[in-house]
Picture 1 (cartoon, rainbow over the protein chains, first blue to last red):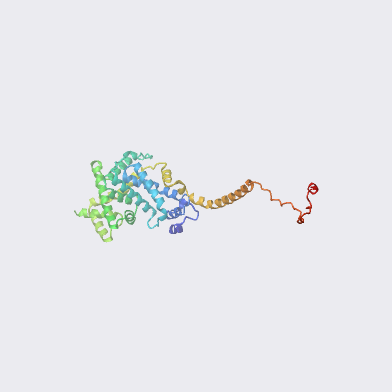
Picture 2 (spheres, rainbow over the protein chains, first blue to last red):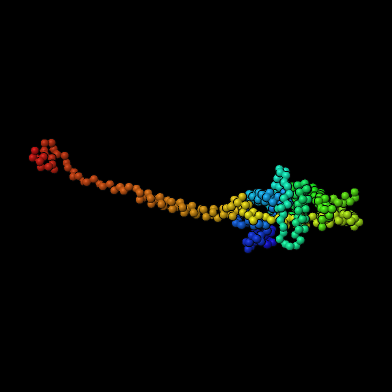
Length: 197
Length: 144
């Protein structure tokens, strides 16, 4: 497996499920059956979620994620692997979302957030999720994108800089602004300026 | 105002991206400032809020199908390569069969032409001298 990580080859057992992203990308270039489906399976949810948090509409989010995967599929033969696959995918999703946000002003669809199945204080969880969505919606798209890439997707500063084609210093300062903005809007929207726990 | 300056550094400090000297100054400030302490803690909670909200998002069951259809079903399924690898011998076999069938068809559909028969041999007769009766003529001719 270590070897596979370094070389981007499929593991010895040939199982796509245990292959790393680089190996799957290489397998996609070789048209190995099932390789693209495995990438799709891994990143379907993160891509849709990122798009949803950016746009606030589930239908648009799935459209954007679908378009992003189609672009990935078409461009994967030319993908040189200088950035991680996830960074590349998130860049495509983010750019598509920012492009759509510029064209159309979407509204928050709170019904898209469904009740969780677990019995553990569902109402509180859903309420906080709605509040989070409202806060994100109130933020500027650029700040929202950088906040989601860092705090939701867990990208490093360097990966965010690659994904958004920004200097590292801009990432640092913009992320700081985004977090401060999130906090201020959260406090404004919370009843009585309640602090987020 | 003093807190405002530090507030801008809280985000980088949270991610371990603040240079050591500035981090040390910020830590000294945090020990004496409950407001910045609370702000730092709240900033650290943003990630959990975002993840909690995203955990409630459900992707449609047919999402993968739609993506694969949009990409081109056979290309995604990786059938392009097997088809190509099988195509060459198939084409060769098909061409050989076609040539053989054409030959057989041509052979059986051409009209039958019998071999040309050689002309019957005719006796070589020397020319008769003038005034003599040519030999080999019918008797009636000789009687005349």
